[in-house]
Structures are given as C-alpha cells and as structure tokens.
Image (cartoon, rainbow over all chains, first blue to last red; front, side):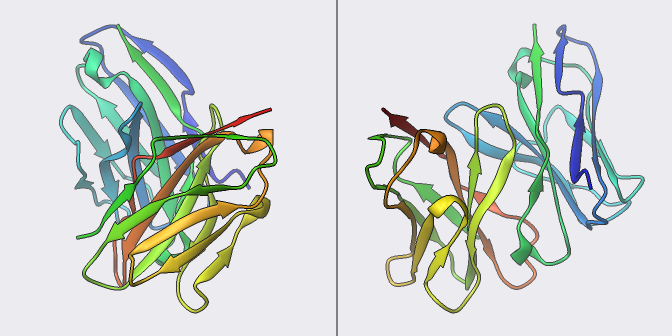
Length: 113
Length: 114
C-alpha cells in the first residue's frame, strides 16, 4: 500500500517553462490537496478537490492550475514558472471524514531559475 | 473560520529534557485538533489528534497533548526528548462537522542538542 505518491521528487525549471506535478493515491480517498511549504510560512493551500471532477481554490492559487479527472490522481500545473514558485510542494488526501486527518506525500522540491 | 497560532517558531532543548510546543486556535465552532511531525526531507505524518472525550491525548513516540477549551490551546509535550525528535511540528485545526480542510499553524522547529 503506497499511500500518496508524488512525482517527480525534484525538478529544476527555467523561468517561463511549464510543468505538471502528479499526485496519486491508492486509498480511494475523496479529498485531495496541494500545499506549498516555504521557510517561515508553514503550509499554504494552493488548490484542493472534494471529489473526482471537482477543484477549488485555496489561499495561494495564482499561477497554478489543477485537474482531477480520475479519483486517484490530482495534477498541479505551472503554466509559466516564476522564481517565486520555488518551493516544496506537498500533496495530501483524506477520506470523507476529516477526523481521520490527512495522508501526505513525501514532497516535490521545485527550483525555478 | 478557524485559525491556528504556534507561539514559537524554534525551540532548542537538550537531549533528555522535557519540551512543550505551544498551539492556540480560534474557532466559533467545535473543533478537531491535530499535531503533525515532519522529519528532515520528508512529508508530514500524524502524531496525534483530539476529536472528543478525554482532553489528554497520547500519540506516537511518547508525545502527548492536552486540549484546553477555555484557553483554546492544544499544547504538545514530551517528558524526555531524544535526538531523533529533531523535526518540524505543525498544529492543525478543523471545524466540525462538514469541514473541507485543515488549517495549519506556521510550524515549530524543534532542535535537540546533545
């Protein structure tokens, strides 16, 4: 049981390039989330999904797009990367009941130069 | 809406000393409360949670936390820390029922010195 898997683990982009981060979960979870983690700023929610085919904006959605075409996958896209998007990105998922908490992936470290 | 304040961004302690990491929350509704731990270069994992009932909850690795409704706090404690406890700790809150997401604090970096 792999839990939440994020790919890639590391990536270096040039300013203006695009890329997609993949989050896959094998726990049949309804909810999925994308966070970014920056020093001194904790975890900030980018986008989330409450089920297949749905997405919603979090605190810091600008510059990012998401899709949830399949229940087990949640994709985070950067259309035109900027140095301000240099961060560690975490995906998380949970069941329909929030009292179980989240299961997190191991993160993607993205550097935009 | 809920919010979480972790009162210390960094906490250095000596090995085998006790530690308390402070967390205060604000909410107009009943809450669930969580502590997560993030070891270096890893994702977050659940340490413990308060849902209802006993206000003292025990988690993994000898940690415990006490829910104090009157002080709106959920402080994390361990009586004797080890080098392996070096990590970042996040407090999180959700309103219930029907909450869609957790709200996380800024994190507290716990450094254990030998």
